Image (cartoon, rainbow, N blue to C red):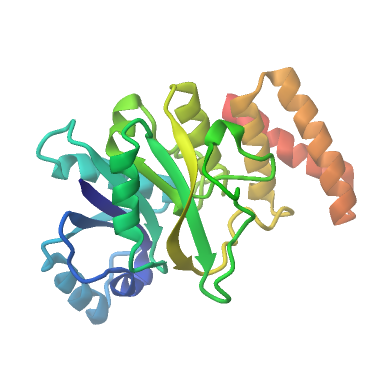
Amino acid sequence: MKIFILISTIDRRILRVPAVLREPELEVHYVVVWQQTYQELSEEAETLTAELTSREDVTLVTLPGRGLSRSRNTAIKTVHSLLEDPLEDAVCILADDDEKFSSDAFGLVNSYYLQHPDVDIALMRIRSVVDKSYFKKYPDAEIDYRKHPRSYYPCSLEMTFRARVWHAGIHFDERFGLGSPKLSAGEEEIFMIDAMDSGLRARIVPIDLGTTRPLSTGMHVSETKVLRSRGAVYGYRYSLPLAFLRTLREAISLSIRMRTHFIPVFRKIWYGVRYVRN
């Protein structure tokens, strides 16, 4: 089974990519989507891109502008252009430009999907490169995603999925995510909501993928785009009355925790509800 590692990077961060790549392995291919917000490239970056494109197991795609969700979607579409048969079974692993994969990660991913042909998406585990601790409390054993604990939220760096999910119409909503104009988070939740609504099967699996720097997206709950993103997820997932109740409850909770005024918090979350529904 072919495995595609989908790496998103932007501007000078392309210089980090070589540290993510491993020695060539059979049936493992890297798709690097390099977003550029300016046209001038350093000599170092030009040399590096030449080195990347010289590897047979690397496909480099340049993409103007920003938007992490847009980058992820471009990577998935590129995978399908690389498959000889559009219905060929292949697995995608999402990655950032500072991730370090475990030596056995790709073999474990391959074995899991071969042993579970009915699973479309498998959310795995990621650790901090700082102290090797997990980023969150993961379920102790493999479970169906529909039964995940309330405290569990999906992260893109945990995501592995069969390339066929694209044929089911599942992609990252480009209104959400880093680099998007209004909403800096929430794209992973929307991806999983769409997958579940489409009847795809997803599992949370106790397999370690590797390490990366501590995650920060979505952690700064007081940021306007983060609050809007919370509301947008409510607006996407629930009816308008239920989204209002969720917004109300969240605004009360956050205003108490952050020791700030309720009304500005409520307005930012509710903005997200209205934005995504419009």
